[in-house]
Structure formats: structure tokens, C-alpha cells
Image (cartoon, rainbow, N blue to C red):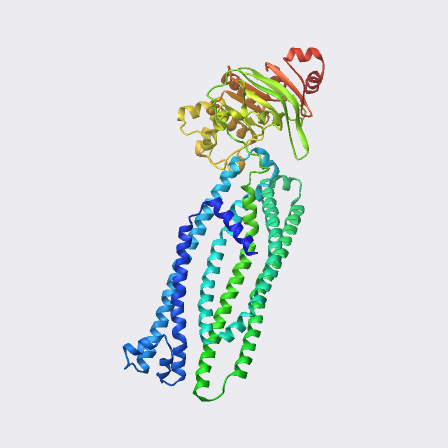
Length: 600
């Protein structure tokens, strides 16, 4: 169990490149604090004996640690010795707690710093994945891992700190107990395996429950994110009760699971306490049976036993804290495992950047026997086609035929499972990813908006955009009059996912964003589907002027858009079934002719 803990901690340290210098410094403070605890503990026994001896200090000659004090000041009386011991105890406790406090602050800051580093690394990790990763994972689960589970994982430093602190205190109390009575100390240690067995059994059960809780938390987070993002759908289909019941069931499952975990956590210290109380009772029996009940020696042994009893309670208290910290560490293991898995490369859909910079697109984009699929499904099958530079190509097909998947491969949102894609004769994977994507602007019917202002959404990723360029793009997208009529104009907040705008307004902002990007390749995936006919015709005219001499790929159903294309590609069930000019395809009277007749 312990080896698993430290293996997971090492993986966390590797991920965050944490500076362990501060951590070890905090441990040094703990060791120093334990020495001062030893001072206060060492003075407690003679102080108790002094009080029980009614001021007789002669017993101090029997204590090796106190002989130097009497040798220096042989005239010291009861009051002087009492106040010196009391001051020593108070000073030892004060310094010990000050050192522990400083150590706790250091570890707390290390935990918060590790949280920050790990959270940003997870975010950067998400950014490095292809779209396939996000198709496979729920947004709520990814958010839960990056926000809440990171906090749980990084608390492991605090748990380790707590374990080491109380391990040092255990060593001090053990030394004091052994000094007072090594026989009783050995008897006490015989109970340690019982305590360890309790912790081990419960920790295994907590580990299993924590894995279940992690999955349930992801489901709850995903459910909430999904419902908040689709509230109109839920309400329009009067599914409030159904969704409420679904969320209630998930929450109830989480409640039951968490109750199970906390039941085990709460049980641990109480079970330990019962075992240790039985041990103390046994010690008391041993003491009564073996200690004289009269005489000065007996009284002295009573003071020793009382001290032993107090140290044993502190000893067992520290053991209980160690057990509790080990239990809490068990809860942190599943988040650490999940985070470590996220950073394992095996099975992750990376989009690796090449080293060749793409400054211009001069010739063609060629798909050569490209296939793509995941999770057992095949979305594209042996696709071979060419997109010529400076030409407009329309991609036509039924819903779900693979059109969007096909065009999404050009900016490398997906990479082929088989075959290759060449741009100017060079495989796409050899190009620097950032320079490739700077040459491509993609506008889809599912317009993506940041929860910021119109200005930020129009100029997204662009460092400097003049007001004149902004106005020109807005005019070409037939957005300018709408923006000028708003009280805050370009500073108007669009809301989450652009909810404060209509579908047509969101699409026009996306078109203006593409215009400002000024790429060599435009991809329009039903980019004007939410516009009324008059606005669509005007926007299309602006797009035609803007894209003259550039490469345009249209995923379209509108007749006017398709007819103006230089070349038309027909896709069915992930395969190219026809391609050619409008007149050529109409003359064949095959699949495109069928689509055209249907649309007409």
C-alpha cells in the first residue's frame, strides 16, 4: 500500500517538476520541532515528580539529564527549579508550534503552486489533442479532472507532511516511553500490527469507493454542463421532470457512495481508539500487578506511570493522525492515477506539429486513398480527390455522409487512419501546425463563440486589428448596421456560446472573423444556413469578392452556392461517388442529378 502511494506521488512530482527543496526544508523544520517537543517532554517527568515529592529535589540526582543543572546551581530550591522547568516546557511547546506552523505554510504554498502548475499543464495537454479526443470524452468530466480532482490530488503533499510530522512526534514519545519503562513500551508496540491491519483493510475499501466516486462525479458534472447548455431544448420538449429525475439519481448515487467512504473514514480513528484503550487497560493491569503500593519508590513509580500514560496517549494520538492521513491519501490516489493516465501518450489522438513552415498555398490539396474512423466506425473510405488552388469546390452529400469530417482534415482537426493528404506535394503532417492553420479559415453552421464581446470574437487570435479593418469586415459580413445600433457596439457581450445573438448574427460574426484572418483557404460548412435569403445573397456576394483567387471549399445544400462552384464532389457513406463540373455531373444524370432534382 505504501509503495503504491509513493509511486503515485513520484508521478505527480514528475508531471509538475515540483521544487522539492522547499518540501525538504519544511521536513527539516519538523525534525527541529520534534527536538523541542523532546525538550518539553523531557522536562515533564521531573516536573511531575517534583510536584508529587512535595518540593523534595533530591530525586533529581538520579536523573542524568538534570545533574548538570544541580552542579551549576547547587543552591536551587523548589520554586526556582519549578519555574525553570515550567519555562522550559512553555518555551519548548511555543518554539515547536512555531516551527510546525512555518512548515505547514511552506507545504500549503507548495500544494497551491503544484495545483497551479498541474492545472495549466492539463489545460495545455487538452490543447495538444486532436478533435477526436474531445469527441470521445465528456466536457464535464474533463472539467472535473482539471478543476476539482487536481485539488484532491495535490493535497497529497499535506498528507505526507502530516504523516512525517507525527512520525517525528511518535519517535519522541517512543523514546520517552522507552526511557520510563522499556517493558511497557514493548508491550505497547505489540498492538501496532492491530492498528496497521485496521488501516490497511479500510484503506482498500476506500480506494475502491473512491474510484466509483470519481466516475460518479464526472457523470454529475457532465450532466449539469449538458443540461445548462441545452436548457431551451429541455424546456421546449417539456423534459424538466425527466432531467431532474436523472440528475437526482446521479446525485443520490454520489450521496450513497460518499456516505460509504466517510463511514469508513470516521470508523478508522474510533476503531483505533478502542484498541488503544484496551491496550491502556492492559498496561494498567500490568502496572498494578508489578508495582509496589507503598514506600517512596512506589510513589516515584506512580509519577513515572502517569507520565508514561500521558506519553502513550500522545503516541497513540499521533498514530491515529498518521492513520487518518493515510486514509485521506487513499482518496487522492484515484485522481492522481487519472491525471497520470492523461499524460500517458499511448492511445492519445495527438496532432503533432511538423517542422516545415507554410508561407503560401500555390498548387493543390490532394487526398490520396484517405480513410478515417474510430471506435469501430468508418467515416471516410478510401477517399481520393483534389482541391485546386484558386478554385471553388462544393462538397455535396446526405447528412452523415462524412462531408464535415472530410473538410476538417485540411486544418488537421482529424488525421487519416490510412492514406495521406498532400499540400503542394508535401504531407500535411510535415507542416508546422500553427502556420498551416493560419492559412485556413473554417466557418461552420455550428458557430463557436467565446463568452466575451463582439470585438473579441471578431478579432479572436489576431493581435492588432485597426478600427478601419474591423468596420470593413463587419460591412462585408453585413453586420455593421446591426453592431452600430447596439448601445455598446463592438463591446457588447455575446453571452455563453453567443446566446444573446441570433443564429444569423453569430454566423455573420464568424464570417467577419474569417475575413479578418485573411487566409489562403476558406472552408464554409453551411456557413450561411441561418441567414435569410436577402442577407445570404448579399453575404455570398461579399464572400465571392473576398475569395477571388483563393481556394474555397463549400459544404452546401443551397442550389445557388453549388451551381457557382468550379468543381463538385459527391460523397455517400464516406466515399466519393462522383466529381466534376456542374454541367458534367448533370449530363451524367447520376447521383448529383438526383440531389439536384431533389433540391429543386
